[in-house]
Amino acid sequence: MKLHTFRWLMMAGLLTGSLAHADHHPKGEGRHDDDMHGDRMPPMFGHFDKNKDGRVSREEAREGMDRLFGEADTNKDGFISTEEMQAHHRSMREQFRQSTRD
Image (cartoon, rainbow, N blue to C red; front, side):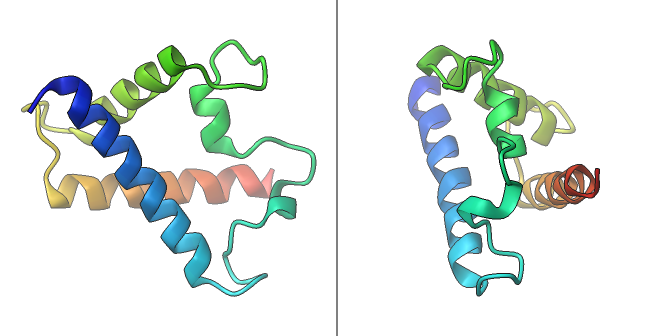
């Protein structure tokens, strides 16, 4: 599989998982509603929007996915195992919780 295709499949999987998580929880119980962050951008958006122009370009999305892949692939074998993905998801969830406490 081409690396380009894999990146987009990975991004689609992450976004789909986020949407499924958001849709699974009723309002006020962990759901990512529009008003959840007030006037602040969601943390993941800031992770991708490197030039802080309020938009994510295709290049920023690619770079963001490369960073996410590198973070999730903890043993640096070029693959993300189920265990690595679950650990990365837990880490991102904790980072999100920390950011909302501030």
